[in-house]
Length: 294
Ligand code: SIN
Image 1 (cartoon, rainbow, N blue to C red):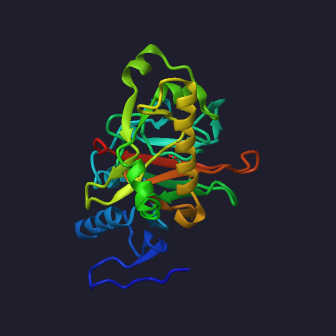
Image 2 (cartoon, rainbow, N blue to C red):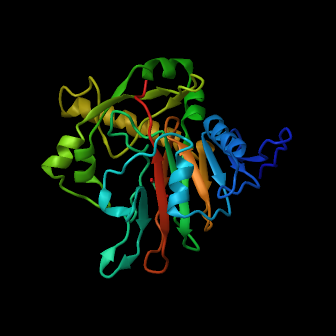
C-alpha cells in the first residue's frame, strides 16, 4: 500500500499505483474540473505512465472533451462498436441488445500496445468503467521503462536498434477473440509497419522496452527463413515475459466510475477474462493520437 503525497497548494494530491509507476489522482471531479486542474491531470499522465481517477460521472460527450486535453481524439479501426453519435467512443462489452452485441467482447485480452499496427500508434488509451463484474476482468499495465532499466548494459546494447514488423491483417486473422478476414478496403487502410523494439519517450528521452503480441510477425532482418523468424519471435516472447513479471505490472481492479489511462509509448497492457455467463462488463474506450515511434 502506498501513501498519499500532498503536493504544493493548488496541485493535485497523488498516490502511486505501484512503487515508481502510475498515480491515482485524488479529489478530482473531471466533470467540473477547471483548466488548471485539467493541466495538472495531463502533466501527471506524462510523468507517471498511467493515471487513475475514481468516482467519475462522465457522459460520452464529456469523455470526448476530456480526452481532447491529451491530444486529438483518434478514430477506431472497428467502427461498428462506436457509440451512435460519438465516433471517438468505442464500447467494450459482452451485452447483446436486440440480438446484436453492443460492443467488442474480450477485445484487449493479450499483452499489447494499442494501434501498434499503425505508423503513428495512439499516444494514450482511456477506459471509463460503466459496469463491471464483481470478480475478474482486471486490466494489467506493464511499465516498459522499469523493465528496460532492469536489463544489463550488455542486454540493452543487444536490443537497442532492433525493429519489429507489425501487421493488422495477421493480427485479425490469428487472434483468439473476434477473428476476422479483412475486406480489401480494410487491408488497404492498414498496411504493415515497422517500429523500434526500444522506444524513446518524447517528453524526456526515457527509454522503454516496447514489444507487443498479436500484431508482430517477425523481427526485422530475421526473416530469411522460418527458423530465423521463429528465433526472432522467441526473443519477442521472452521479452514480453520479462516485461510482464509482477514486479513491473500494475493490476487494476475496477469500480464503476473509474477512469484509467495509460501512456502507450512506455507500457504494454492486457485485459483479463471474467465469467461472462454471470456478469456484464461495459467500458467506454477513447484514444488520443500519437506520433511515429523512435
Ligand atoms: C484494451 O486493451 O483496450 C482493453 C483492456 C481491457 O478491457 O481491460
